[in-house]
Image (cartoon, rainbow, N blue to C red; front, side, top):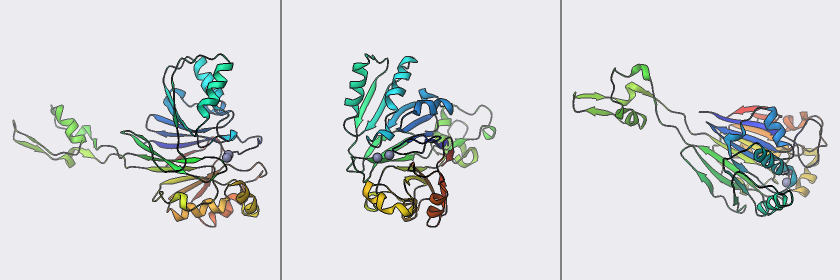
Length: 303
Ligand SMILES: [Zn+2]
Ligand SMILES: [Zn+2]
């Protein structure tokens, strides 16, 4: 099963050359989920050849500009490109008002429908539950209402190995095989054992997105045995005070969270513009949680 996390932006509040503000694309099979949409996200989608029509859901963690200022540009371009597919946007209260005002004063009439779903950032709850994936909120601790997102893909059905099927195998039985059933064919008196014709489907995978947030263990109590977690790491340990004052985390704190929830992999990002080099970020994080990786624009993590 495809479960890829593409990094589109690793910066934070103020701009730096070669770093874009927060934006990520999680692709599960043929669906792509855009997570945060900082300024210039549409250029990053072009740069990394993302098919925009596959994006039908956008998740905005909170309304600090580095997480959504790219939205009006992206949606306007989709409109000019004659997009017809609906898009659902999950965000805290206020975003619909902001976008509606922007569209109103630019006299933009959309060819497609935007469905706004206001997130409650106080509690963990389900946003989406389909055959493919389940998405829940992760309440975070920041200066304004903010939540992360937990994606869990569903285990896929068993896969048929076509070469193993006998000739003229009855078509109605294929679905039963995918469902994991053994089949008794009354006409011929033959029993088809599922294990002879199928292999395991893809297993369920999980990914947690946590940006922006102060270090807070209570808020992550819902996360356990996660395959991978993206956690903001705005600062290094020498700026711990600053992290506390601004409700952000250090790389070491991000690593502590990954360790406590027993994650398999940690990806850090949302670096403050004061850091040109990220050597200390990775060093400090790996001192606590070895399997840590730096988010970098264009990098794809296979979960
Ligand atoms: Zn931010
Ligand atoms: Zn923020």
